[in-house]
Amino acid sequence: MAKEESWIEAFPAMERGDLRELRKAVDSGFREFSADFGPYIEAAFDPLLTFLIWSEKLLLNTPWFIVLAALAAICWYGSKNIKVVIGVIVSFMLIGYFGMWENTMRTLSMILVCTTLSIAFGMPLGILMAMSNKAQAIVTPILDVMQTMPSFVYLIPVVMLLGIGKVPGLIAVVIYAIPPLIRLTNLGIRLVDKEVLEASDAFGASKRQKLFGVQIPLALPNIMAGVNQTIMMALAMVVVASMIGVKGLGQPVLKAINNQQFFLGVMNGLAIVALAIIFDRVTQAYGLRIQKHRNKAH
Image (cartoon, rainbow, N blue to C red; front, side):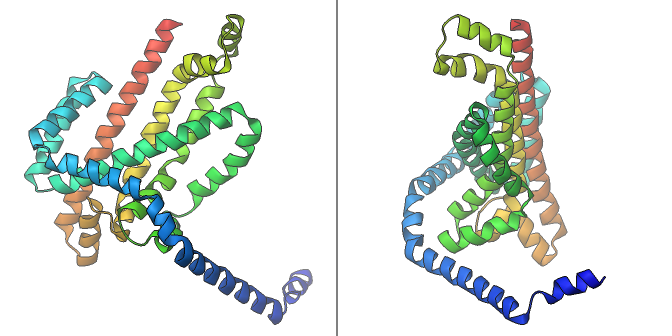
């Protein structure tokens, strides 16, 4: 007990005051940085905003029956399961019947863009981790922080730099959702049988040929599991992202919480659940098909 008291007394009021000054310095420094460089950072993300707006307009302006047919075709290609396809058709028809079609299309657009970005950045990073133990040692603690930090914390620096709107919400969702894809890409490539790699070396395959012709194809079931988890986490972030102006199913849920509108909140929440189940079933079924195909090849 005496040791504990002496440890506390080792921090005089002056040092606690220094900590307050440090906090003020960091806060003011970040505000100055966002004021000086915020417009340039925002301009750098203009192509991303254009892509997001284009995808949203495409889904909103396309007749509902064409969107439904396209979704059913994608689900059939991914799952080869007629029950899943019927479930998709019924779910989206109910979403349209209850007047949630536009918000669902906005959320679907956000998820598609987030998943595309996560794959574009997450897969190369996962491959780098698999190729280098040093890269894995550096990136793993960063992923640990990204996965354990509360989702609301992501919004603070993003909003301070980019303000409120689609792009800040998109970036926050990608940061929150990308770690599983990176981890499982790394894991999948590392789990490729060494005998297969030795055989490819014996046939004179280059590193590039070995990566794209052997390691990535064999790691696809794990990569698809990563895509599945990324989509699930992106959907979980939809309501949080609505707090900074991201339109979609999250905004009615937030409105329902603020105004105690039970029916509105439950219906839009169920629409998010329906999207999650559809994405989950299709990506899981596709991953299992790849796994079966790989087992037959062996």
